[in-house]
Length: 319
Image 1 (cartoon, rainbow, N blue to C red):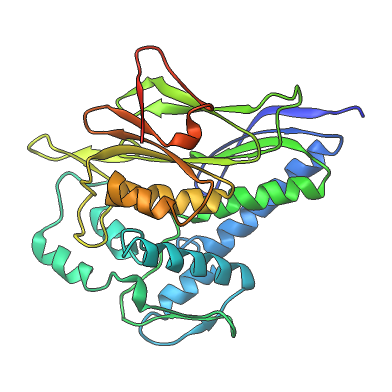
Image 2 (cartoon, helix red, strand yellow):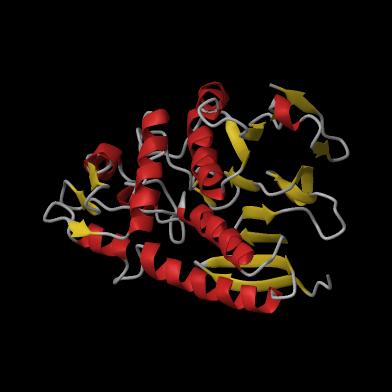
């Protein structure tokens, strides 16, 4: 069967750069549907869209509950599951903390007095969810949800589902570091997803070969600033302390069947560290991880041994 393709397409959506490659007779229609779907999801899930479902939950925090869609129930339910498994290392109620640090303008760390006040508004158990009746609420005034650590993963999964509806069986999409793949490449080989060196943006630490899986990376290099003393502060916050996570890891890439799963788990493992993180992975069979610690040592799980190729000068340790 003849295949047409739209290769190396780029666009902007969900407040990030998007790259994709789609193969199939209906590739152009599939991409149009993808673009519309990403806009729909942004309008539903972004807390910066005043009419989104998430914004409505936030606006009524401590006051009332709202009726939400089936898909937001799905996302919030999975977020709660990962929060329980990680004992709060992953927490979508960190929005007030994210705003306090404000990496776009920050020149120094927030005052401890403000930190204590904001921390009292963070806690995933304060998100009250009734999946049966599709109702959600936040318990305290000033609380807010931020789906930055899970929403793009969900969107990547939705794009893969859409592509299949259009008869596409070979595709990839990269939504701001959330990579999802469908099938193999048209030549039958697996997709090769590079993992960036966390201290040199011109290099990779290696690449993982995948087919029909997602690869999502959380790293301390994505958004950061240096304070007046020259100390580096990154954007992945520990919900239990209010400060950027100091788990000894600087990059975590999770490989899983679902980009939403990989998205949430990469954050949880980054915050918790590799020892606890391996325990989280055990709850999701078939999920693998590549981590880089603060000493630039690279570690991969056993299941990646045949699929991860290191870059020149890099050694990968099996964990």
